[in-house]
Length: 250
Length: 286
Picture 1 (tube, rainbow over the protein chains, first blue to last red):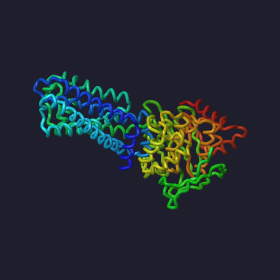
Picture 2 (picture 1 turned 180 degrees about the horizontal axis):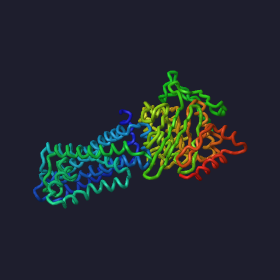
Picture 3 (picture 1 turned 45 degrees about the vertical axis):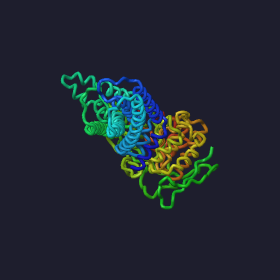
């Protein structure tokens, strides 16, 4: 497993894709939270800091995509073949990718949310706007950003293992993020459940920021992290089973 | 083009990629008697690869119907057949990438998935393009070496051996097809394997490259390794292989030493024999 983990870390480090993706998204989060903290009028009684830091949720979106790309890329570039030849047991191969990308997602989520916090809080203070969060809550937001980003990467890996096709996986991720929740809300009386248990609501609760709408009833942070982890585990199990049983013809 | 250097196994016989190569630059491949095994590892007895009654359907299409053959240590086995005959599917079943519907394929007596250290037992080149275009050739090999637990410096040496040292830091996306074949060959040789499975390795190679590949395969077989190589270049195959396996429409048509095939039909070339064999197969009801 050590060999597998080191190989996955090298795979991640030796292509520019992930570095560029991480750097540009960190810049977007910094710019977005900075601009909002500097210019927004903050009405409605919601903690200004929490509403600004919801922008750092972009880290989870990109981790979801990155996780999916890390698997679909192996099929697209046919590198899955040498990888499986060296390690015929495909589940450990997927597990190594999962551990590596989840660790990278954790680091990136902590860094991106930490960066956004470091930009937002001083700007709000300079404008004499109360941030509306305690020190403990700040820590919860940053830790939650790390955990949610790690889990998003894990979920992405599962989606990539199921769909394999790069474009298909990206479309699935986007559909999950932007189409699934609104569609599910059409189910009578399902609205609050979707707000709570949909990806959006879970990510907002896990990162201790605000949902959409801002008044949505959210789960507690711990519960949200656990449910996100359960989603990721379910999708990953399906992905691992398919990876084991499918032929590798790429 | 320099000849392939001769690996010397460590006295304890471990094929762990630490083998020391000594240069035999300029030496000619030596003609050898059939079955000569100079390098046969003590751990293996019997055929290097044994394929028995393999079958594979993709939906309603039968890609491989009934393929059986053996590959011996110390010999190059040419795997021939028309497009769509099932060569690649068969090779992928041998390597455990495609699950067979029926039949078995064993390497050194075991199914691929049960080999204790597959990369150190079998080296395979299935697709020249199996590298991430954004990763350098050197990094590509480093990743695979790391995964297989093979020291990275060895990967650098191999790049030199396949003539890619100058392009090691270039991204693989900029490689020509021939360069990607060489990179694929370096990857196949990473574990200093006793069995090599190569699918159309001559694709994209220039005449110098094809000569280099022929010398490489011959020296690998001369060291006692088993080499299974599929190809469409019959003139090249006739110069390189010891044994021939011909399949058509997913079935084995013949397996024989090349010398025997040619001796049985005086005046015929391998191409004549191949066309006769595969042509008659096409006339059969399916």
